Amino acid sequence: MKKPLNIPTFKNEDEERKFWRALDLSEYYEPKDLVPVSFPNLKPTTRAISIRIPEYLIDRVKEKANAINIPYQSLIKQYIAWGTATP
Image 1 (tube, rainbow, N blue to C red):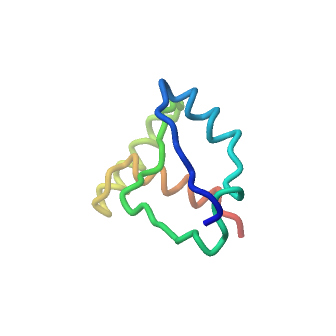
Image 2 (cartoon, rainbow, N blue to C red):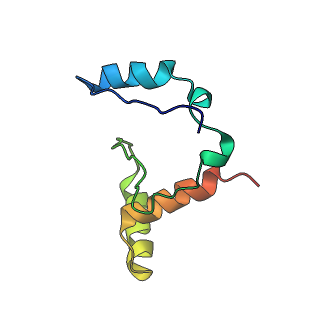
Image 3 (cartoon, rainbow, N blue to C red):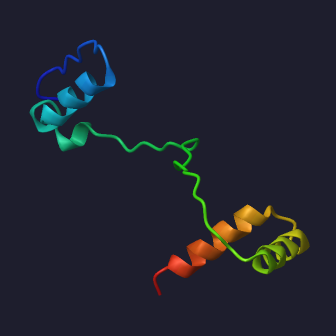
């Protein structure tokens, strides 16, 4: 560690963002000071979308989802993920 990092108390998130954006952590830490971390409970951010799909297609997806015992929206997400996967 090069020198101690004093983190101020922030009034709001914008002030905190400005602080971290302007900070050069290499002035405070050496690479050997860093440790790996994991966030096992972190969930990806989701956003609701609206999409028009023919009813017969939704019915087929629901039937397939029911047959494999998963929610139909989860199955749609899997189909989208498979379709966007790079070969």
